[in-house]
Image 1: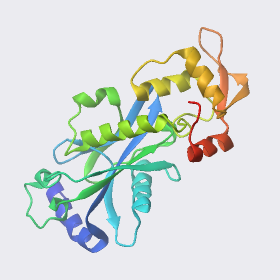
Image 2: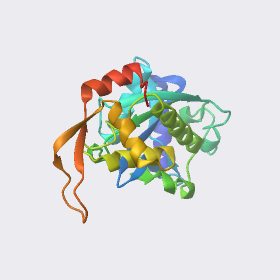
Image 3: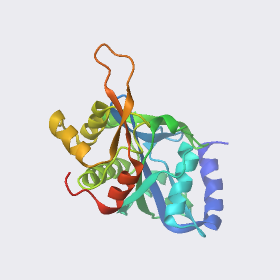
Length: 249
């Protein structure tokens, strides 16, 4: 079945299953090899890349719909997920389906709720569906060369801005780093998200003062230089600061 026939069939089903004019787009961030990545799909129809997204079931909450989309697209569940914006520009999706009849579900005007998720890159198994040919991690540095559909570039930019703002008063890293990590790895994560270099001494002092780290009695193996100490997050303190916010950061 070709793309157009698939879309038309899914349109008929959608009218029965989903809430009209409401959609969800998820920006799934992962961190690997010192790069911040975002999970994208490539559509069969026009080879454009787009964010994992979907619609809200008639008996489903927004958060539940977002979790379902994440599980279907990335095979992950019970992860950090936060709403960050609403997107409703005119013709944001109508023009994308201009080759279809006006009664197509996907061609109606949709207001999209944006969520961003922070996941451990190694725990994700990207999945593409029948309408897409690929589901891949793309480095943020590669985005200028990627043909993104609709307003998805702006959605990613807004998600990154929301993540940067969150870093000013909340801890991050637990969902993006492996269970054991080094301080240089944690600093690199902050630098990549913020888009700037940080003073090592100041960063180490500040991050240790938050109380969210616990030093392990082991070092990272390999490398030509002295093996750095390994750390993990103090989950109780981390969760407390997620609720109360940072006072000394």
